[in-house]
Image (spheres, rainbow, N blue to C red):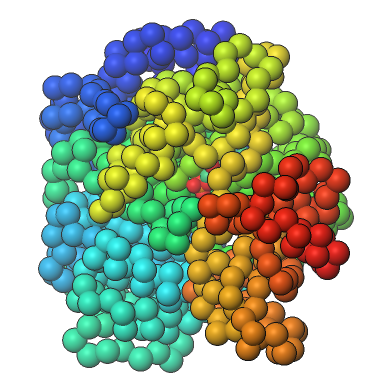
Length: 635
Ligand code: 6R9
């Protein structure tokens, strides 16, 4: 029996029940039938959330790239694996077949080996959305090196922090990148970052924008000549099921980013199986996910999930607004895209343009629309449904996280009836529950609380790089024997889940998770600043924008506020990146604090949202008198 492709709701419930009743048998069957193993497992699952320790398919041996590449060569060698659409629509697109991708990955793997990269070494990939990004990822996986992709829009400080946290030996980057009508000096950013990184022995540089850059002798090498000399064939390193595949950093509620570690076999099985079902992927479909590979969405649903299924996956280098706001629709029409997976922030930005542009394009190839990254508001949902899907393509509002590796709560298209703003039902094998603040599970329907997961799924992150205690504290300590997601959720009268947003100090701006702490740390470095607190407030396009409350030192009080605001945003750009710039900065004499000295962001959030009617009991604050001043001077 093959449970690999679910076709109707009854079948979903049937398979779901089986996956919960007999999780090991269920996943074993999926793993057995649909993947290439060098050696089978001795044990499907062992787990203990109190340690926490989770192992899937222990004893198995494999290489994920043999599943993404080698096994397709006989049947799909000439099929397009990656369809690259450049930033500039006048530049020719690239159709990379499975065979060509296989060859390019092998060449890159040889280059990495020649640079001394070995199994288990960490390689930092700071590359824009060009084919070499996917090739680099797969080449690392091929030789058993652990890739750590850093989004090529992050600042040099954010980059060096990530390189140092996992002691990367080598960095792959490009001379620069295109972004609409702008270029970004990536190599310059890398050079600056590497002033602080002793672990990096070499830098491989891809030529993309042909800009003038400096190459440090003995450290920096142009990649292309090295590739040209490398063989197109090569053996994949045999990996153990639980060997780390990659590290990907995500923001937390303290300043330091968390290097989430994903391992090989479970991640492969889960991303491939979810891809097949959540997008109802069929041979000859052309699938497009607009995310950047620098985020988990790109790792799982541009690279690994699609390639494991032998799919054609589109990589788009540019932005939705270049050369105009019709670009996405132009691409859909040009490649006859069948599945389109994007983020609410992009939908809102496109909706703002009206429907004039979109009506000029033929979108009739679309069968499935996806949304990910943050809660999708009702208005955006309807715009997407009416204008992009023409009410014919179901919207897959998929909830998941960097930590979960793959999609966790989602409708299955043409299977689950959708409901605006609801991620609906758990994916096969996923056991969500809703907890109250006292640690009690809220059973039954029509309940509202905090979202946890009771049982391991194959692609759960196994640890935080170098800090297992933090992994335990962050995800497994709030509720006994549960994985805590950090999100609030409700379950409606039919058992559908709706994600209501973060309950911790993470704010999602344009789909990017931003921890308040690193931004506050950056602001506090300004010599005139004494203290600061960041909250989110609703924004039409970005979902949330950032509002900063800043108290000044005496020396800062006489300073010009307009200049100070500029300087503060400049520091944030340098330390975190331009995505974390503040939309509003209010200078205030004090910040409301609890008696234990914690800033009460809850109150500041209400003020930023202009909802001051019910601030709750503020009498227990250390300094309740500052609240009225902040309200009076709110922006
Ligand atoms: C895949 C990804 C994870 C956080 C997550 C939640 C929010 C993601 C969502 C959603 C509501 C959805 N989130 N998808 N909220 N509905 N469909 O985005 O991973 O970058 O780690 O963000 O994003 O708050 O906890 P990541």
